[in-house]
Length: 262
Image 1 (cartoon, rainbow, N blue to C red):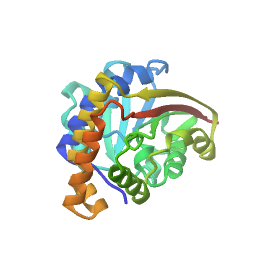
Image 2 (image 1 turned 120 degrees about the vertical axis):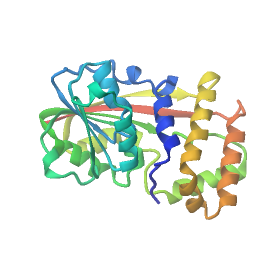
Image 3 (image 1 turned 60 degrees about the vertical axis):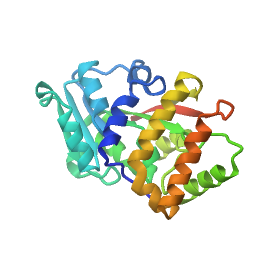
Image 4 (image 1 turned 120 degrees about the horizontal axis):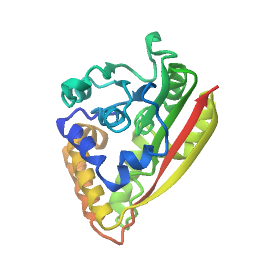
């Protein structure tokens, strides 16, 4: 079962998330040099927060954002300043089957928290490989075990989490697979680094707020997945209650991979 989160609150969540310690753009991309003259693809751009960062903080002057959600793209366009519209262009497209006009166009492609939401990560990576110019690079950032790695003695919640992992058609553990998926897609010189995210204290509170907003956007999806409003609401209550308990650890891994089109 797949999902799209087109609710307005999801755009708000994405905008706020980049200010949280676990998801700051500078922490993820400051180690990468991006020339202002590069043509950069933000694959799965959502509300356009990365596109705006690349323009405002890194000075990139040609950025294309692609997303499959027309609602999300409308939100992204509204968040642009008038003077930014010459540098940033948004397109509605399916990342697993890009049109020929996107092929061999980009010096750098970035897929940030995208592969965990698609049914076929390898197909998307192959399309991104085709979208790059010869010698171009892909930067992929994804999580491994986010959300479902909450450790709890609550048997009912554990059953719900197992059911969720079993029913969705995307991979909540795609992070650990990034290196070999990139190689399978044709990338060379693949390297990666990992960062352990241990949600405690302020980080736990930020993740709890992030989860509440995610639940608000996921309402229809969770009702369909669990079969009823009652089960969906019980799952959400249990999760947020268990997340409040400091003895219930929430630890997951961020993978940042880079590879080149040879």
